[in-house]
Image (spheres, rainbow, N blue to C red):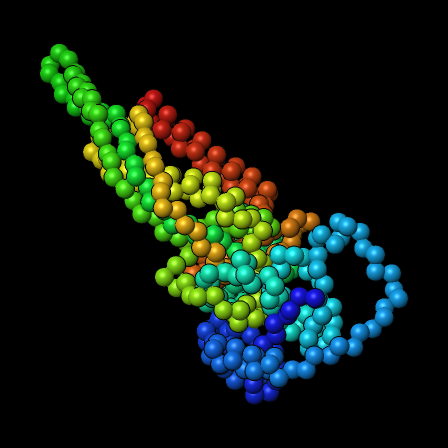
Length: 361
């Protein structure tokens, strides 16, 4: 049975969470706040004083699970109420479905699975809800019923696993560019085109290039809420997970290298191209990028995930739990769309008619 970590208040014994506003551990029962190190010292003292109970029960119920079931989930026992907590093998933090106490599954954050760094949550659940309200504000083509009757089916604060890649890029590019000038006399209009071959070379150091390390989270959704302020990365501590959901990585670093390299190469091309200015046209003829000194760190990033439904469809939104950047697709009111399309078409037709009438006068 995997070890579960439950953080208890030294004052009243209640389960405590990480408070994103206070940036400290906080008890929701007595409102006492604690520094992270103090809580960990208290937990270690309790574990060292605990007495192991060797008594076991002889369970006669059929416990023969199918192989695919055993491969897809794990069961744990809540240390507070004894209830069973079921999760898949990537779950690193969750809550008991019976007593709602937050728990951290130590086995999924230990050894090679232990993150190097974490960015703790800075924004609250209420701020995530406000983010959705701001996201739909002013959207003329959004169905009115979605605004008036919209309800959030589920909102979850999740720590999503990422690999952060560091590397160096040595690059050389050649561009073909043109400049044009035009003049005229009484008989002709002249155009002169000058051609240039432009060379660029240099190196760029890349730090903390993120790649989503969870197969359960859509890569495009996670990239859409970037960037994170990596200056606020802090050494990982299990207490930061208390009160939130968390998954460990299930996509290893070597399977993320291709995506990281693609992002680095694309950024390198864009950066070098931005130095070629003052020309009418610029075309890259060839380029060479060599990457070296690659290194990857395993980190957890805070994400608020909101799920809502309308018209029989499910809509998922995500908010950066550090910066508040909000993303998500919205439904389209087709009647409103065609109304606006028809109005615009009518205005364009009227303007065209007026212009034609003035021209023909």
